[in-house]
Image 1 (cartoon, rainbow over the protein chains, first blue to last red):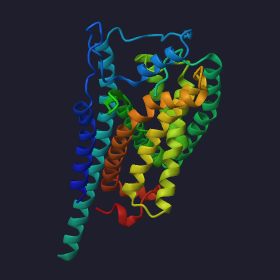
Image 2: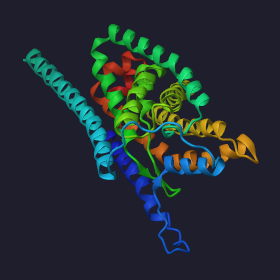
Image 3: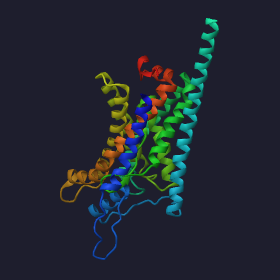
Length: 115
Length: 225
């Protein structure tokens, strides 16, 4: 039963991530014929909104290091996710084996007692 | 929810840093105490941090036509208490600020406050409330993790609206605008975070039933496979 629930949970996440790609329509190109970008970062939109509310605002500090390109940035994000996922997998794998061996020992013990 | 480097006025940047600092110190103390009492939970603490690492790296498209990411702080808040996530979230945010130019050092205090303080405390409070009202483990975990995620983004909206009130309509108009960007975008992502946190809890309930019982998160009958 838990297996079905887990499968449904994963499908739910995939579904929620796919639906926007489907339903969000790209706005018509502007007068200059340039395509409007969609699925940009919300953080960037907030930055633009600050520019609208306070056109005179100047950021007073710059990032110390910026990834040299979009490719390098996406590599670093992938690395971040991979490190995290790797650790979680290692932990759950270890916990699973421990639980399995504990059960096998218990079963062997109960068989021996029965004999 | 990452307010970019330099995008909070100096006094706000300092104010949020001062507000976050005691929570981070409290969190370090509470983690030390927990690990001293239960050294075997050290690796589970790593899992809580790793979960936040993964989820905050995933930028997922949303129905508003922009992308945002979950925070992954609900899991750790339930396992180790809300304060524990403050230093863990701070490490995640520092990594992103220094290596990815995502967020920043001057906005670190504000970002810690929304992601690593408000989120975890919401998760903890919602979980306790839901369980006291008789919700199952899965429903409690789902509500806790999704509302924590959502409230983090509401907090970011409040922080930005406070720093940049609308010239005509003031704080409330500005809040509506920032919330339109952050909070609405976040709704499907918050649901996803809730589902993923339940998934991890299912694995813990299956393979680490004793830990969950020791943490008083689950009744014995709820963790037996």
